[in-house]
Length: 114
Length: 109
Image 1: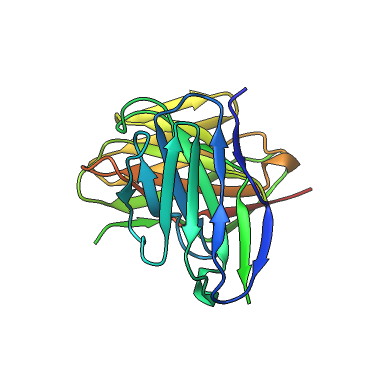
Image 2 (image 1 turned 60 degrees about the horizontal axis):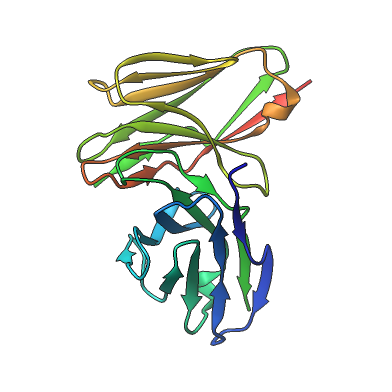
């Protein structure tokens, strides 16, 4: 079975803290994505990666960075968390070229920044 | 700008049929997806339409009209477990996914 695993389901952090969200997929997928999901809004793409050590900005990259050192792992980093980054963060992956294929999502990481 | 519209919430009765609409305005079109998301869980893929017409998959069907910028998801023989949010997403000319805010479907006995 296809599996995308996010390291933490729930996190509470303080303003200014550095936050790491980890995502691992076991499907050998080339493409990995980080989204945030907020009530009343569609999923918004933060960053994506189509290969190891490659990254592309999505629609809302400000305040975030990413790391993809290994094919199966894609990390989202909040260098200095702020309250407006309180959200549900979803990692996803898809195989092959970006024009095909469904997304496989992780369970999500709900981050609260106080 | 790019926009996906779907109703915020719908209510239906167990055993009935419900149609969830999605209209879109995007720069280009390379396919439309429907995902199901139960509360607190990951979205899961339901359907993909790239050509006009109806795609049927068991109790679920999805319809697309590219000329009208319109799709719907049809759920038949509703079950309580169908209570979830249904997300519509369109791939634009750059193959980027544009997401609707989702429709929360409430099923009543």
